[in-house]
Image 1 (cartoon, helix red, strand yellow):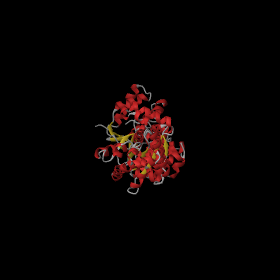
Image 2 (image 1 turned 90 degrees about the horizontal axis):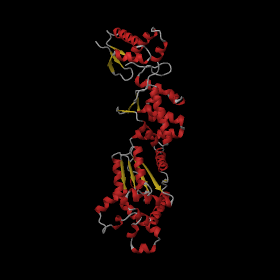
Image 3 (image 1 turned 180 degrees about the vertical axis):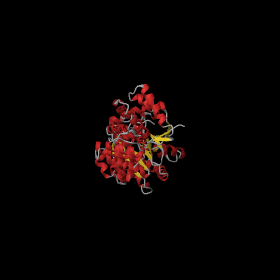
Image 4 (image 1 turned 60 degrees about the vertical axis):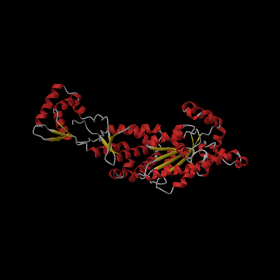
Length: 435
C-alpha cells in the first residue's frame, strides 16, 4: 500500500516516494548512505499510514534529523523554501493564470505609473511573493499588496490612481476615448499603443468611416466627403470663398465634413456603449462636439483629448517620414498643403480650448501616452471613490485597517499563508517542503 502525501499548500495528492526524500536529504548535505537509511526507516514507519500531510511528514523528518547528530544538515533542511518558478493568480471568477510581470507592469502603467517606476515595483512584489513561497494568490490580494507597495514606495498620488483604475475595472463600465488631431499629429500610433496598454480591443478610425461613406455617396452628389479634411473648403459655394479669409474657409470646410462623419461616429460609439465594450475613436473628425450626441446615453466613462505637434518643423518632418513609412499617403502632397494643415490644427486647438478639452503635445510619444493615461485617471476620480475597502473588500477586512500602517513586505507571508495554508516558522517563512 502506497502512502499518499497531501500537499499543505494546494491540496495536491502524490504517493510517498523514498527517492524524493533521499534527494532532499542529499541537497541538505547528508551522505547518500545515511540519507538512504533514513528514508528507508521513514518508509517503514509510514507503511500502515494511508495519507499524511506534508507538514506532518516534515515533522517526522525533523525528529530523525535531531537525532542524526549533524546540526548543519538540520539547518539546511529547515531553511526557507526555494522559490517556485511560477505563481498562480486566481481571479474572482475562478480562472487561474500564471503571474505575468509584463502584464502587471502594463496594469500599473494603465493606472498612470511611469514605466521607470512600474518595473521595480513589479519586481519587488514578485520577489517578495517568491521569498514567501507563494504558490497561488487572488487578484484582490495581489491588488492590495500592489496598492500598499505603491503607497509606501511612491506616495499617495500613484496609489490613489491605482485604486481608481482598479475600481473602474471592477465596475465593468465601458470607456470611450476620443483622440482628435490634424494630419501628422500621431493619432493612429498613439491610439494603438494606448489600446495595447489598456487592453482595449476595439479601435476605430474616422478616416475609415469616411472611406466607407465615400463608397456609398458619389463624388458628384457629396463632393465635400471626397476631399481631405484640410481641402474640404474648396467645395464650399463660390461666394463664400470670395468673402471669407482662408483660415475661416478651412475651418468651415472641415466642420461641414465633420458634421457628415458625426453620424457614423455616433453609431460606432453608441454600439460600443450598448455592448459594454471599451472603444478608442481616433481621427481628425473626432471633434469635441461629438460628446453632446452620446454623453447622456450611457454610464460609460467618456474622455476626449486633442493631439498636437506644436513646432511646424517637427510636423513637416513627420509628414516627410510618411513618404518612406507609408508611401501611399504621398508625403509630397501633404507638404504642398502644409499651410492648410497647420491652419486646421490651429482651428482644432481653438476648438479644444472652447470645449475645455485637454491638449496633449505629441513631441515625445511616451510623454504623450503618459499624459493621456493621466487624463483618463483624472476623469475616473469623478465617478469612483478610490476606497481600498470598495476595491479589495474581504482582503482589507481580513487583515484589518492596521495593515496600512505596516511595511507591505510584512503582509506578504500573511496573505500567502491565508491562501495556501502552509505552515510557517516564527519569521513567517514557509519551511523546505517534501511533497
